Amino acid sequence: MGSIEDIGVAAADRRIDRRPLHEEVIDRLRDRIVQGDLAPGARLNERVLCEQLGISRTPLREAIKMLATEGLVELLPNRGAIVTPLKAENIADTLAVMGQLESLAGELACANASDAQIAEIRALHFEMLAHHARGDLAGYFKFNQQIHLALIEASGNPVLINTYRQLNANVKRARYMANLSRERWDAAVREHDEIMTALTSRDAERLKRLLADHLAHKLTSVMAAMRENAAAAA
Image (spheres, rainbow, N blue to C red):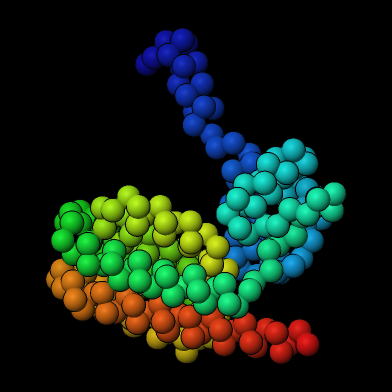
């Protein structure tokens, strides 16, 4: 059994490992924005959010500033902050570029990814499938995002990785919207099965094509969802 001093050090280590409160708040707010609980253009009422999250205004304001750097929140001089409105043209342009980046990443991953990296992506894929089977869209989306980011990381190209991460932060909400249709969600899962097969066999040409098609289909679904939302709001 360790000494009192050792126990004290271990307890201090556990305290150090705790995440800063504002990081927890960032994750909570990001999820609410991505999933549409906080709608595009909605004002972020600090009093209400503090009550809902059980926090003071200091960590909330730190979180809002960070989300602004991700493009999810827009800071208005002397008027607080709002959820950044979705702009169809910007989303279309961004997803078109991301489709090319994912296609290139797939080609590079087939050449550069370690067996361990591919095994990790496969494990994430099975976790994603489990959430799809349960009809848990929020859980599915988190693993879906991890798969795409892990594939980008497996490319081994730092410029590609950083560029993709910056772009992806701006279209997470749109990518989530793409699977609100059960038909499109099921189709996306089938596409991921094919993507996983191509990656596992390191079939670069097929993987490039599948990833480009996957983003093109997502773009079509996103645009349709945005048109439906605009019509409902009119």
